[in-house]
Length: 499
View 1 (cartoon, rainbow, N blue to C red):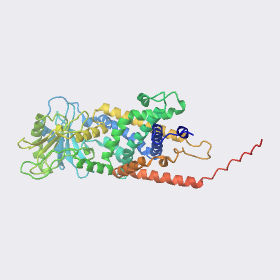
View 2 (spheres, one colour):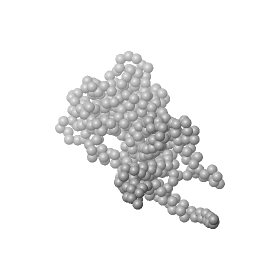
View 3 (cartoon, helix red, strand yellow):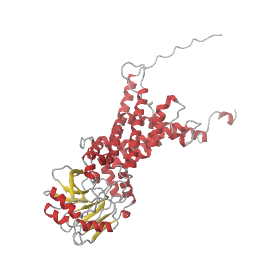
View 4 (cartoon, rainbow, N blue to C red):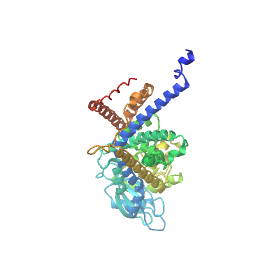
């Protein structure tokens, strides 16, 4: 026997064929792990994502709905020259003489009303009271509670809080944090599975097939549409997931800590006048939607502050603050007025300026161009999440994505239901993917995955805790299944046939 003959039918350990086989085995093991993760998350976490999608669809179009339902407060049909800002503020003070003046949002366009905002101790967190004034007649047209730095009126606030916590307070925030923490995991796992499925079809290697359902396979129609629509909405879903986590309770705290450590925080303009060593006026930051804005003085100084708004407003406009503004009153002696551009539809910059109301001298200035790149990206991402970055187009895009996400989830549950045993008696659920993927995965892959899971689970607890629960449940199911399993009877031996 020759050396060649003795090695026939086998490949040396370092041969390309053996390496290719090892690579294929690792890829199959990873695919099986992702499939099982996608399955568990799809069954148990998808309800939270579904609720977030439904409420998010309402949240996306809430600015437009607000413009329709509250048109009487937000707009006026009066025409003519605009009255001085001090007269508009004075008219609002007559409506609420006992409250502390907090800020003023001058009318931006013809037909808009001016908001004169007060601090009201009877209201909840992040809520203020606003008197809406016709800038042409300087007469109040109504008042309402406004929420956050965007000044959401009650209808939009109700939708906002529905999307945020289902009106259940801090307990309800767990739902939205679970949805935001898991949405990117489910989406990326599904993308990898779909790519491998498409590549397995030798006649279709073009990336374009990732974006279209395969109509030539009727039996897989639900899966094809589930995956294709998921790819269509994937970029927006990832953005919404990341920005949603920054608003969350636990992951949000870690995000804030990371941004602070990396100097990615939103810069602020200094409100103190020269010679004063007190506070800096924070810019209306990334999460100011759920925070009250501005500063406060006292009812006794309301009339005096009202006379200075025209000076501050003029200085702000002369220094290129051309967008919608909120002018905050000084918080006390030795403090300046602060004017900052608001987060409004179509507004991409948020310049800020501090002005001595008595002299009109600029004491500090913070143009948006001086913000760091990460601070700008965070601001734009959150503004897009709120449906304000591109106005109505932004809102319609988010609405379409939420509808697409709903169809993806519904099709996922439909596939799960169709996997149930049809001959079983009683109600039965769909079967999970096959077990044993973790045992087949090489240690060189399992170890980094385990470390990454621990780190990500610590950073986002509402991802880590369910992931640990999935693992425990999966192990218990496996143990119980082996305990109930009965060995199949051995096949009868065939009788030997003698010649």
